[in-house]
Image (cartoon, rainbow, N blue to C red; front, side, top):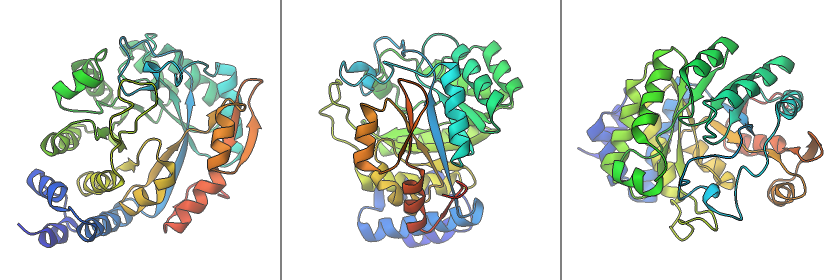
Length: 345
């Protein structure tokens, strides 16, 4: 098996498990990685086109009650908790209207596993649908009752996410001690069986072997209604038990995105969490989608976002604002050779 031969075949057909593992292990320098990324871009352009999707996440669930919290999540840090404040359904509706005004076409609602069985997600979807024509999808992990799942389908959600993040049960239990891998698998299967679009994703850089990473990617092929997936490179959050764990490298994230594209050729594939400045690298590796966290508390996160991406602050309520980074993201997308799906972006 030679790398050039595998990549030549990958232009014509989905790669097989042994080929994917070979690429993950043998694309070990920038020349071979660039060849891998070029092949992934070719497949993306042919299978899904050259339109890059920008979507915005709206946190609408109360504090995640996973106990103990995942060791990498801000919920396990007193100074970086993600769910200190959330948007009410009324604020979600206001945010949806503002997002539609600036050209966004799809939003994610949800957050952590609050224990409501997805009721808050139902309320948030209803709020978005009541004031906009936005496509909306839900991400509350495995915290979904069958009843609320059916309600979400009736409301016309685009899809529901339920990610495992890691596929190695030992690693899963180590970094997600309060979570249940089998329950996540069950909910993912239930979403698929209900003929609802399923979104998933994997996390790299937390101790999984190359073999398990490839097994995870191929496990996703079992779902008939998979519409999108992504690659999240671990990034340490200060104050968490994993704050001193090394982040996933840019190279490893790009390689995994490219291999994901060569397997899930016509799906939406997103890039890494908390590495926005590397968006263009993920595009060059074959991604076609990015979820933007642009709903912020203006006196805290807003200042942080403003230093990184100049943009307009659009008030939602007294406590929240929408930080419009869309022009900056759209410019980065165009520089990387694609067109943004945000109208006027």
